[in-house]
Amino acid sequence: MEKNQLGIQYMQEGKWEDAAKVFMEAIEENPKDPVSYINFGNVLSAVGEVEKALKFFERAIEIDENAGAAYYSAGNLYFEQENFDQAKNMYEQAMKKGINTGDNYFMLGMSFVQLEQDKLALPYLQRSTELNPEDAEAYFQYGLCLAQLELIDEAIPQLKKCVAVDPDHADAHYNLGVAYGFKEDEKQAKKHFDRALEIQPDHLLAGYGKKLIEKGEEE
Image 1 (cartoon, rainbow, N blue to C red):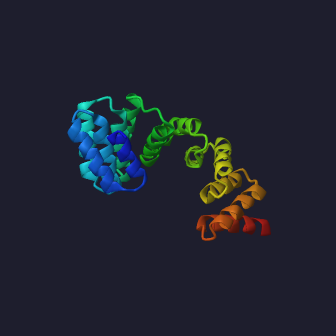
Image 2 (cartoon, one colour):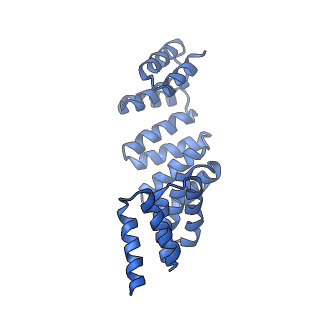
Image 3 (cartoon, rainbow, N blue to C red):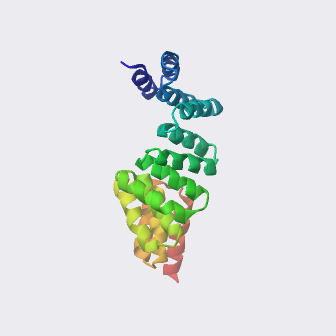
């Protein structure tokens, strides 16, 4: 088995030291192959060696400026470090270099969300749902982004798609409750607040939403 493939297998098995050893051997054997640097950076990232990991991603980009996976991996590191502006830049670079995956669109959208630029996030989150139609979190974040922009009628179908993929997504049910509350459909709102509480009994916001509806019904 080729060393990079073997190293990835070790990573999947959680054998980080074995993976690191194999990737380092691959780098020594072929120091001009950016893939080995990206893989070694991903191992370092997984074990929390952030600064070292970034150096390996940067080295991969020095060797091949079109190594899209290096930009994407660096973006993930910056996102985890809450450096959302730099994360956004890296995901954009990854896209320019051909990384047009649902995950890259999703993370670019989430970077814009964290930068409080919901309008800019919208098309990327939408595209992520098209590319990953079984990704409940993509539907949830897209629906949430629509709701933040007060596009309630557009948000509801996305949140419904989220709970169709993942029926136990408590936050999606809560936000459906809020959306139906805005539309003054108390029956549907209460149904989704109840479902959120069934999944997560300590969901404070769902409990508060349910109490508000019950109070309104009493009055």
